[in-house]
Length: 307
Length: 260
Image 1 (tube, rainbow over the protein chains, first blue to last red):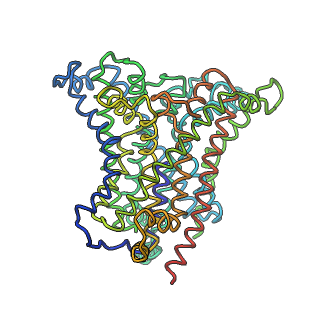
Image 2 (tube, rainbow over the protein chains, first blue to last red):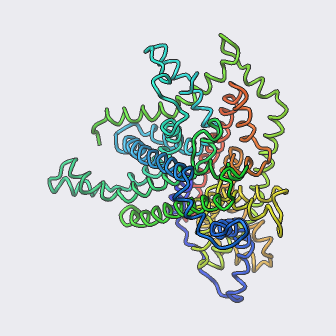
Image 3 (spheres, rainbow over the protein chains, first blue to last red):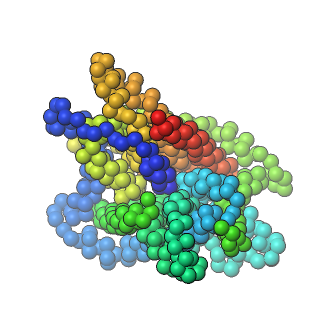
């Protein structure tokens, strides 16, 4: 889903007309009044729910101040495991999806492939980065699940039962393969315009100075692309970290992710302590905020060279 | 630029396989309901279930409500930021990015805890659900409307309308809306695709929806979930196609606007 934002951003940069200059008639105070409906909505359905999570993380059952919930984040085994699983999956799919997505964007932008393949890939990336949740889970069950097409093909052709060899989509590595389906298209969507932004002059300057292909990538292209690369990988990390539906559709709470644990906590107090659910959610907000800060600051750095 | 073509081809083909294999497998799987032969039996069964229509209908209803309220909220706000309050832009942009910081599960958790008990009980109404969907679609809706507003000359349009005696309601609905129709429609289609596939809010707030129905039959039956998954994919796909098709027109319109 995030990919489309990027699309729109690039499109809006192209739109040339300047926004209207502020005009002074009526007071400033009146002008802010026009924003009131939006602000009230944001406070009611974004800030208050988030703030209540923060406040309740520091409250015990009877509403007194406590650090117990926060301490529990680092001591309760189920919680530590959930965070470890979520972070591992997010890391694997961010790095894996990032590298593969980058190579794919590279091959279609700079690899000399026919131009039609490029628009085809970008369109498809737009769809695939939005195709997640429950249907994605079922699609992969049909592909590499116990009776999936690929599973049967490998069994018929190579006489190997991959599930007997220990492969399953119901563990973190299997889930990573599934997440990759929406991760690398997002990388393609963001990297393609960045690769397009590499100027021909830079390569020519490098070649004129006697640089080889390797020099160009090592000293020119990669340093310029690095903030975008890292920033997008961080975005992918957050994208995987917040995902819930796909893992849930794989036989309920089989894989113990933080999101799954929060969901279970909503449906029935599985941790036997309402405060813990709040602390769990607070931990997520903090990690997601950090990824957002990382993404935005790297994005700012990237815009120095790539306009 | 003719270099390492082979490597590029290999990567590209791998990517295409990753894209299409799950889709093809899902299709193949959905045809295998009758033993030994391929048939569309799973589709027949899926579309015979009255619960499918019930849940699908609800998802459409949520999508329409979300789009309606999201437009009422976002269009005047974005317009106002462009016309009178450019300095509020960072605040509004920050708010529209908030959904990335609070994932759906966390937001639902907060909403249930906050509005599930007095003084204000909303969880018996669909308000938290629709609000959640609006929040989820906020980044896309705001950005497309914002991009649309950037491409037109709001100042001239507004001043012309004002000097002809139009009120704010008329300006928004009769002047601004028609001028950014394409941008609004991209936001609308994207929101539709998001809400139709959304699972978290509907599941945790216990409302009927297509995705929760899909999950439910997924744990009971084989084959029909795959048939419906494919359908869900085509909903997303057709929405994206519509956006692309509209965007092509918008690009041309912008060029024309810049040209004169």
